[in-house]
Image 1: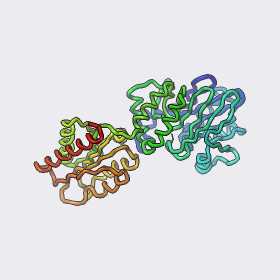
Image 2: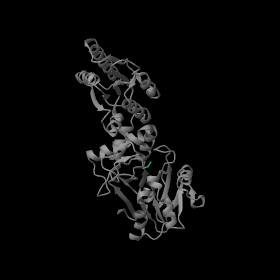
Image 3: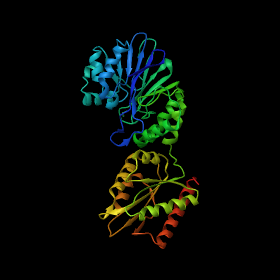
Image 4: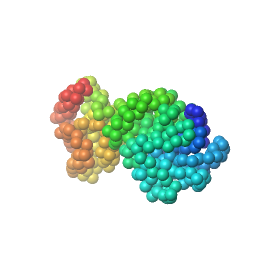
Length: 394
Ligand code: FEO
């Protein structure tokens, strides 16, 4: 466990989980993650904001004695997911007079998922405050970043906000304070892509709200603390924005390289027109890289071989991920190659339908692309250029 003073009577109490290599069994983690809990010692009462991933409960509970924290009056649950709420029952047991404070949605979650007794919970409403003596905690209910039960806790006198998962990153550190770096930005972006991107509209609302507060520090539940709040707020503002970049995503899977050759040709033609593209190998690639690319792309062109009369399963995986992450993508198409026949694009187009993309006529070839197929790819590049131009991207 790491204990570190953040400011007078505000302590970080969390740990680095260096061994965690995947989160939600979905996105590989480059650098593990941290689980952040905060202890706020007021002149009369002590509060703990968010707790610990269940695997580390014993270590977490022991750390209170080891660090001289002998009283806890309030446990604040900003979010019910168990990487933060998992140690609530053990903490309530250790401090029998402590009360769990949370919103009504999160209260239901912790009762059902962690069997927290109702008589140990106080439900608060939006903007309600509790006093710790010389410090006041104000609760901002912020549903949808990323669960319906999420809220922030604002420490008024210190002008510090604890934002739960929002504005976090799967990242580990020696110093709990963020040092801007490419690595941190990449980890925060992957994290945003996986858990926040589907809620970009809601994110924009809370980015603005926190910017307007002009807070001194942001204390998230994963990753480092931001002493320069605008660093992470500006990144989130860009990622959650409505406008994509002049970028075409080219996820592909190719059994005999026919599809890959067409994707490469399209990338070359797009480059000639001043449009960036990024290739992604759906059979072997890291889903986190794809998720990150989805944050920025305006156009998606899927390249897939036919397998048993339909798209390669890796292509379904990508299309499904794109459909649930709800990126800001506007335009889509498909390129594919087959050996003996089937429906290559129908089901994928159906899965992408909820994104309401502007679909360009797909290109389907038997085996290798011929001269007339390359003419069609030229035309596809031209149409993408026209559409990006119309959007003011190129
Ligand atoms: Fe880090 Fe939604 O839990």
